[in-house]
Length: 350
Ligand SMILES: [Zn+2]
Ligand SMILES: [Zn+2]
Image 1 (cartoon, protein in one colour):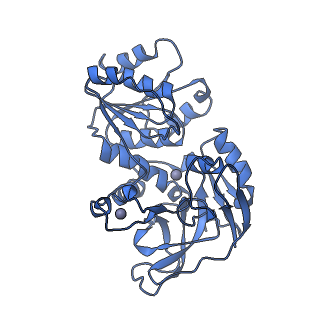
Image 2 (cartoon, protein in one colour):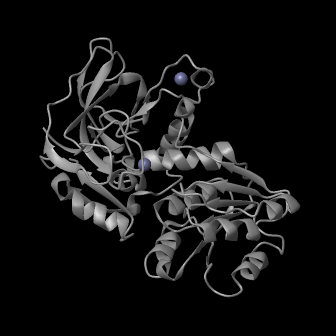
Image 3 (spheres, helix red, strand yellow):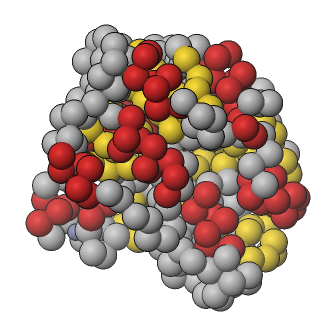
């Protein structure tokens, strides 16, 4: 079958090539991939700054249908439409696994970085990490379930929003848009901040999706005063940093009300300065999240099923897998929102 492979560690070494079709074990299912999204971490992998067990098939944000089920698999059948939790191989013995915090397992191997992923026609995964899709959730929307689960992890599990709270979302890319939707679904009044480049496409998308009440340019004079004016003079209760930039982190800290919560969602990819004195003087709570846990996937799926978030407009294009370079280019250039890659033969729904 055709697959996108990281052939060796280091910058580059990503190739579209033939690989053997994966073999389904007794406790596994083979998923025929419908489409798989390009993630920021895939760009980091291309540049050799995110760890992998190369050689490895890339891709972790996917949806598909069951093509084959191992003989011990009872609750999934051929043709079922599914998504798959990313943190697949974990030891189940360490303290973190026993607490249900599998992302923190030192032996964790995730789909698409630690073990073979879904930029391919087929991917084999343990059946116990597979979720059947609600009937009304399309395979296209479901390909966004992984980033949505990362967002439900931070918004619903790592911070506490109450109806009527003010939430600041700094960053208007896919993660910022999803964070705004989930914060809104939790009852927050959401203010999104961004830069000049966000005026053309990203702020309008935020307004179209319906989660964001106000957009504010953080690069314009008086931005902090604007946020204060929108939040009763005190500042937002929670700030979600979704840009991974030092200036954005600093803005969040300054904008937050005293006793507010600073939540790091983006991975900056490098050390960034935080004014700890300021955080201390304001008694800011600092938190973050690393990807997602099973509970966050279940929550993301419930939100999709019941129409609490409308994510499908965030899919800007579904490109054939052999056009991965164009997809990576658009993702790196921040053109549009999520780009999905679909393996051959074209795997369209219906
Ligand atoms: Zn991802
Ligand atoms: Zn473990």
